[in-house]
Image (cartoon, rainbow, N blue to C red; front, side, top):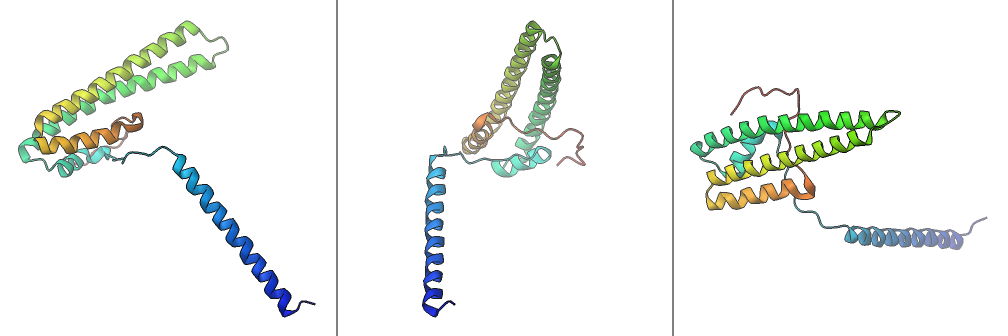
Length: 171
């Protein structure tokens, strides 16, 4: 039978083991987190509300907003065409890869075509940025640069509106 002393001793042992495991876990995860590369602050630009997002973030005037909308429409149209072509090429690449007898020459051609489309998308993106930069004041350009830096960190593209989602109205 357990005496009070034995119960207290077991309680102390359990608490001691729990505390030690908590300390070890805390140190382990703290060190693991410290080893991860620092991420830059990320800004998510909602595709369907990109105009409103930029208007608020850059405090665009009505005249600037008109120019922004036109640049944004052109960017969307061009970028969608390119990303659609990239998706088609990727599907063709996968289809060729899974064939019983894959044609490595065709795989090489498809890879090159995907690369060209990716380059075109980057060109469209920087052209969009330069067009916005020309619209903005120096103060707005600082904020615009922060937004784009966040968008391209980790090689992310500006997020486009999802396909099949229609805008109910433009603002």
